[in-house]
Amino acid sequence: MRQSPPSASVVRVHRAALAVLAVLLLMVAACSGSDVAQEPVATTDVQLPKSYRFEPAAITVPAGSTVTWTNDDNFTHNVTFEGDSSLTMSPGDTAMRTFEMPGTYAYQCTLHPQDMQGTVEVTGS
View 1 (cartoon, rainbow, N blue to C red):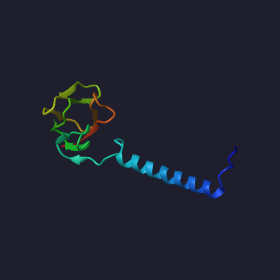
View 2: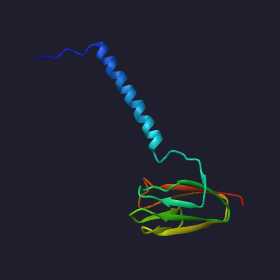
View 3: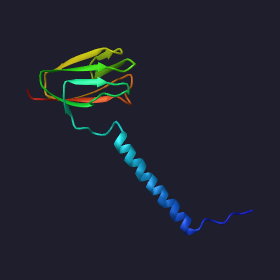
View 4: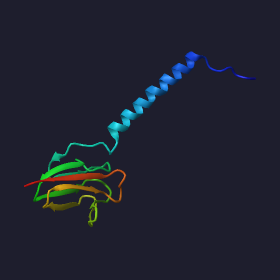
């Protein structure tokens, strides 16, 4: 038995529903992705909460500042700057680095690079 093709009105409804779904998916991706640019927060303290992220992910500090990362997660993480050694933290540990020169320094947890990236923006002293 052969089915007849859907009516034009059914096709229009399906296309409209797909368009709405596509827009909603784009909105969710834009709001929840780790790629979303964040305005840097003026702080020298970065937390690693129980969620595989750096909080805040983007910070700004004056040159000469020491930044402290605190691992509040249940898993070991690290802070790794390109071309630099890792600062590894077991649960409950902290790691520190002093930034002498202005610039933007990107880092990640090399154990969880898809989820954990951050930047330190160092301004003139």
